Image 1 (spheres, rainbow, N blue to C red):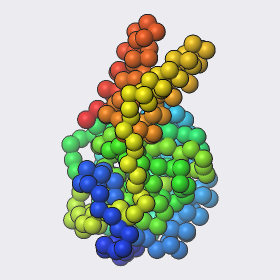
Image 2 (image 1 turned 60 degrees about the vertical axis):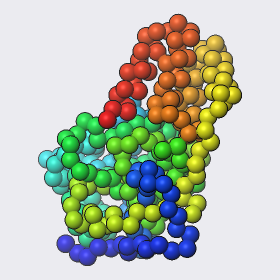
Image 3 (image 1 turned 120 degrees about the horizontal axis):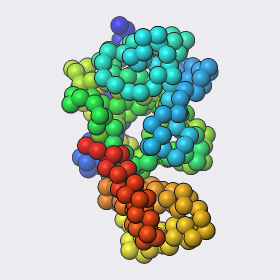
Length: 291
């Protein structure tokens, strides 16, 4: 394998050190060469497939993934269900030599690697990942290739914009969600890796820069009443799905208790006597936020 193609980041002016909870969930780990990112971006944008829409229960629509390393025996990039094991390059990665060399140069113990695209006006609802996998140290690395200011991760009551030019770490076993409001598409290279000495060296200096993160306002009683009033009005007009999405999107506007948006939807349905719908959303909360 080649040498690592990133630069370890040290503290500089403009680097901020938020609380350990947020840094434990999302952080920059290293800077990347701009030309390298540009070349990987070109390969990703030129990919012959956008991938598959998977994990539909987690999203509003508009989330697509294509595997670069997976456990498919024939290298199928449309096999996008993540699992433990030793992955192999897919036929798609074999058409992306710059990206393939970059991944090899990291020297990490990969579990899964993919391209992930989130279209405009799309959301990944609050959820946790890895709950269905074996107990083992694993981490998710993000390399943003295309993004925009409206494309943000929300976790720990904080909105984080994962900017290009850095390698980021997300701890997906903690509750989080993603949105892309205005576009263009948010396109990330995402690698799930196992803990080893190489990863620990890479992750030695987690940090955020000034402007990366913004604390969301705490939802007040007045905010809650306004949300429920709007959702109830939509239900009265027959727009039940739209009413649910009003409440789901509250997660991206306010610092809420974990699963609070799902609780609001269950309450909305209980108030209108739709007990089966209320139970469905209570079950969804349990499933999406399983530890």
